[in-house]
Length: 199
Image 1 (cartoon, rainbow, N blue to C red):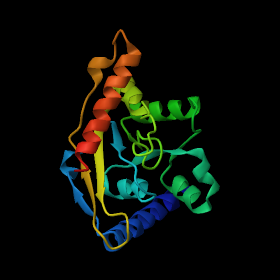
Image 2: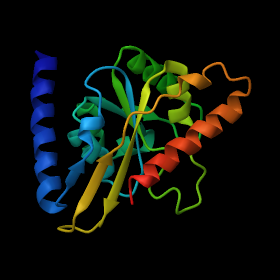
Image 3: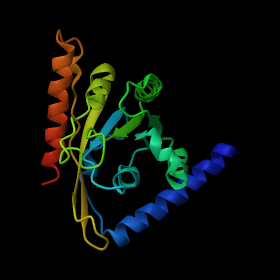
Image 4: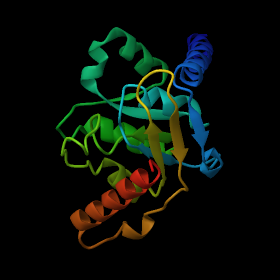
């Protein structure tokens, strides 16, 4: 019964967020035909505002678990959204073994996760080093990566565009002799494809 009620609540919350995004941010959605209906997927997007995670949640057409920094759970509303969407809390600036294990398990089940390689809002603009988590998960599990570009205005009632790119596979790097170099190469490729979708 508890799961049933949670599922109903999730439908209501997703509907409310979708309506909010369409009315307040005039969201235009492109490329959802690129999203496979089955199989594990890693959604990777650029990170501009607080709107990005819920926007991806309600437009991706697949259930996905976001990797969210643990500090967000101090906010009751964000903690509620994290519970509804079964987000995976991550301790920032550390190799969170629990978060890694949960993410790997989710992907190996054929489900989806979502994350922002920038690691924080406007990470590229701030000069932050792009995180290699998406590359690690893609290489380790063989999950396809869907790059997601979010562009447009950040103020209310001005159009926002979210574009889903074609799935990318990085299985060829699984047995690379230089694992560090493989992670860097895949991370750079993912981020390049994300940014191409923002233009």
